Image (cartoon, rainbow, N blue to C red; front, side, top):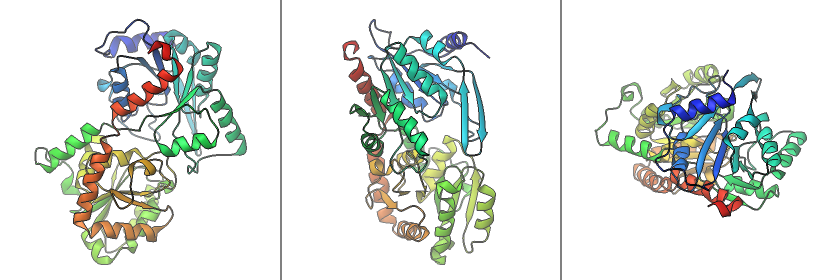
Length: 406
């Protein structure tokens, strides 16, 4: 185990620094977040390039291999960072992550502002108390919504409200998260930093495949036409409703259009058994796929389907739209109110309703012109949900708590 100080020094020695020199008086922002997720690297890179901030990211863990098999793209990191010593254990549905040296690390960084991604880890509370002791503005990066059914007991909700009371301002990805904070009567200083992926990567890769500049690597292993689900293969993502909806589609459509589920999870064996009983039809499970493979899947699919029961956002919707794909999404997904306009660039449905989902799938499968129009509109909309737009939102939040330093 590295000490906090040695870990910071290692990160600063090995990570490319911003091309802009650190200006005297420029506020230093410390972001505390869970893991080095591939979709977070582009937004942190964009923030590090801003002249008005000095960024340092503190990760609570490098990865969470028990839940996701994400590749860690360290070679793409362009910001200062370090990974805290940690201990992780999963007990049932609960994810326990304990970190050492939180306060020592923050003292070594000496930030002017702390932005914490969430409130469900002990490190989040340690960071909040450190900020209060040192009179440092403390911001919460919150994605929870009123429709998120992962909200817990009265006791947990009380602790959540206590945590919110320690925050000086908030950063949210969209309208649903902002509305939830207002309902909790949190600080009125709420700033939107739209959730973003590397839209340039996905849109360019999709364009190259369509134009024949890039040869598909897995296309021959897929149905010629298919609907696509990307995510964990667990009941909470709505996979069993998706299988039921596919079975309810007209048999003629199932003969022409398959279903591909990309991902892994504890319910995959049961899902495969149920899928094997559906005929006619072509249902395939690809297992976990990295972003390069996902870009190909998005490009070749008819539509992305996210039938989730509850989701703070749904980053796969961003990725699919960036690849020019229409989307079918339950209205409880956090991204729905921001990204999806029903009938315009996708279709919004209720969760737990296979009949409604089947009708949406059949309407998309049978209308190629409408499908193309929805895809084009989605591609245009997602351009506003860029890493640079996220960085701008965070910069506004920082300026609100230390305006004299910007």
